[in-house]
Length: 180
Image (cartoon, rainbow, N blue to C red; front, side):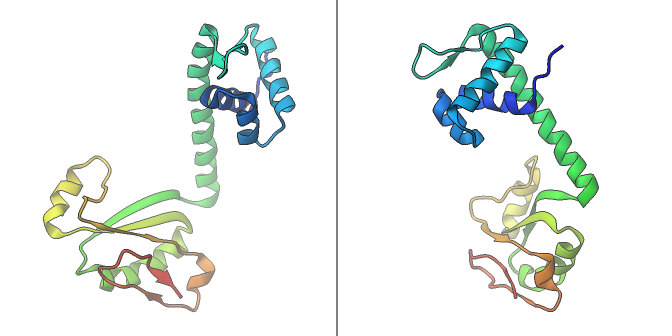
């Protein structure tokens, strides 16, 4: 019976991505000997050598390549599962991109963002001013992203900062909207 862990897979992916046990250990926040033990344990459980340690940088073996490919999918699925559980427990989370024409943003955003931040405190909101002539192009893309002429600004809001404060924005500027 195999007892491999997500952490072992993450360690293996770090070695594969960085080509170095030392660099991978730093990325995984463990010592190099601890990382080596994680990889060795995984190799023992799988019954195969995953990395050719005689080369610099370290390279995956042929079998290692196939295991690494599957591990990428497994770790991604694990993270998606964890994120889904977090969303269920904590409400929506992630990043939302909002496109708005510059003439409306100073009027609508101060009305919308405070309520949005209260309802969805774990959602990062990125506001893009989009010229009316560019809206059709932006909407035709799978995920709405701003055209090159758009002005981007990050709006970071925290629940506590909205209780007694107000929001100020500077139209046409590239700096962040601020919550006071």
